[in-house]
Image: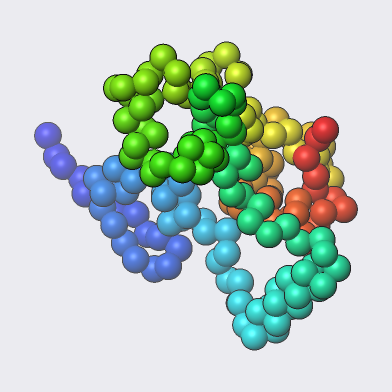
Length: 174
């Protein structure tokens, strides 16, 4: 049997073997072949424009500070304690005045009947357990990632458009 070594040419001019390429994640393969920022020039004008947008949003008071902090973080897990429900481990830790390791010890070993994460399967969590529906000029998408795939950009770009750059066109569904 003849072994053909297939070579893949990437967008930046590099070449890799099929074996290496096929071991990459789908995202890395896509970015290697067709990066969304290809042929974009991020010069001084772009930097100045972005700086001005941020500066104006702070001056107007429309820019959220620490918008992805604690319970607002989509990866935060809600915690049940004797004092009630907290939307993140950090909020519970701060309430009890202990470090994270001590709180986790309570949850896993010494006080697991009183301290525990809320069940994510039941949907009984703080924030972020469900995908956010996004409304775009091309219609409604079930998630930020679905909208990002449609527009050929990353999820972070969609979030930036929603928050600042294109907030009249892109928004979360209520």
